[in-house]
Length: 310
Image 1: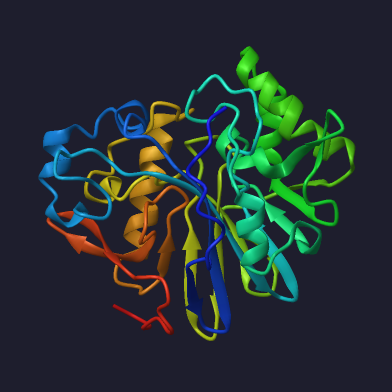
Image 2 (image 1 turned 90 degrees about the vertical axis):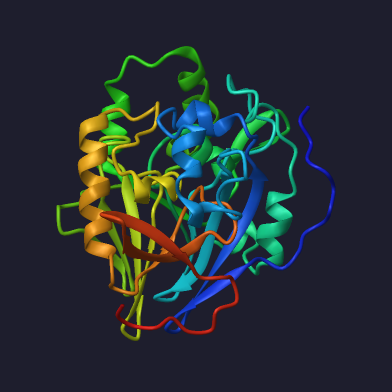
């Protein structure tokens, strides 16, 4: 069993967006081999050419740093969790995800979101490292971790996988982390038009397809300030400098790149706080133009207010 060092829950890093406080709930740092596998185009030489990636997002050798975490916040009177990570005790083909034993639920509770208190779980897409804590094992059965929460994902996303010829590891992931939520009647499928769809005041789902056909990002607004939770339309800040770099698991690489370029162009100079679902700490920042593309201007956790505009 893979068990990270026991350090005990600590205060969740957070960012303030208007009246909203967005908490990062850490699960596990991903191993160094993740970068070359996931983003094969991000070679050490290419990464080393972007000084701004160091020290936070890459090391001196050009090795990418990636993370698994969720975001939790209260908006429109709803207690919300965006993506649920890898999960504990799951049988996974990826050794970095297999049979984890982390204190994720303790961290979530320490952030003020005990599982029974969560009202809404937003799943940006249905990949193993985004749905794992949908369930936990009780008396040998996988049961919903958040029994009082509606779980939302795109109708396009669920219908795509329903018709997809899945390999056995993906079938296993659906068996232990998606189907139990469906059988409990907790999964809602949402039609998401090009302009996005509001879920509660201050929370809007926007389509960012390519990584998967129904992939979503999550936009938060409060008092004229905006934040965007990326999901996997951007895995790592190196993709700001080189939007053509795609993930080896993108379903539609061309569409993924087009989505990324469009999104980054729209975000540049707006002051929007970008919260990367796999960005290593400091995790958050603003997209700014840089050398014909973009870079991330980090915003450390604990920032009290975000400036509006560029």
